[in-house]
Length: 256
Image (cartoon, rainbow, N blue to C red; front, top):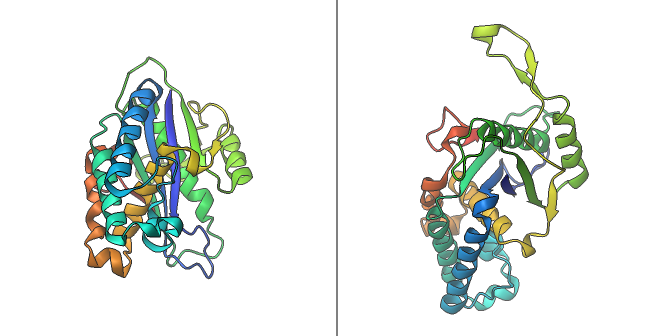
């Protein structure tokens, strides 16, 4: 089974939204590689504790590190940014991870465009397709399944979406081949409803949060991030980006 840990960056609202982009990131890991990867994450967090003073129980929340550190104000801002950079470098070394990214550019979208649903539907479809085509790293079983683990979001809305896609998942035809219309390709690999976790309790969700933050800051960096060249940190994740997710973007990012 493949586990996909998901977090977001940016706002999913459309009208009067403070953000132009909505980024949804899934960090994928096979269950048989989960324990070894967790042990390495714990070791990394111990390094962060010894080097910067970030306690193991404290959440690694990239956006808050920069703008709203709370109790972490005790750590200098440039050190908090250094932790984000070092986390990206650490994650890039975990060859059993794969990261799927979906970006919605809300500029010029019609008022009825469903940002949240479209982003999640696309991420889930890419997760399903990559499982069925056996393109994720890790063990290769004859039949694989997937489970979504994510921070609390619009929980009921997401659960309803996953249940609906198991029954009805319309995928448009490639018009040059089949003409207009769609095929119904219901999900077959996902098991159970999404598993909602508080990000404070999951190092893997925190890793997905960091990846989403880095992509968002690459697209529209804050003045501090640009000043420190942090808008380029996203490319540090290059070794683990799921390029199978998109045939049109060199880093596999799905733009909508």
